[in-house]
Image 1 (cartoon, rainbow over the protein chains, first blue to last red):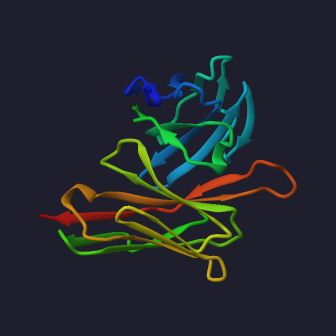
Image 2 (cartoon, rainbow over the protein chains, first blue to last red):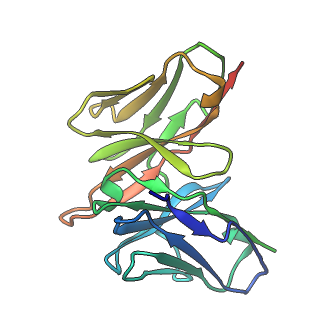
Length: 114
Length: 115
């Protein structure tokens, strides 16, 4: 069974641009969650999607948004990029329980904002 | 702000020694998980322990949970160089009367195991 796949692996953008990151969960997993990891703030939960609906949301500004498709694949969008958005963005999938059960993480997308 | 705090921030040991990492949290939780991360890659799940459990084992790993002290520890016995990684605790807490809660992570412990 293939693991969680995130694309692209690396991304370089400039301030003010927007970016879309993609996450394909493990086959059969219906919950996808997103996380931001930075040296200063550590790992922070962004949001979780289940059956195409946002089920949970962390404390991030509205510039961060996401969606989930009927095949459970998910995308995360960040608009009007700021330097502080430079981070490793991780997505994770789980069967149905979401954050309450074992999470399977992808390798992440390393975003650099210049 | 992060709910979890981990100590030590860094731990350096020799192969064959045991490594103990601690995680403390502030509010009640439903479960606590431990994850390992190798050099900026994705996290790998190690163990999940529920709030009504006190200890769990998985191979060379032993996790304890003390809800009265709001703390957990991860013990890796007979460490190997391949155990070199960052280790994170993650606390799940349900939000009020809703079914779905929040997941917060500790700042992590960087473990270095020297051959």
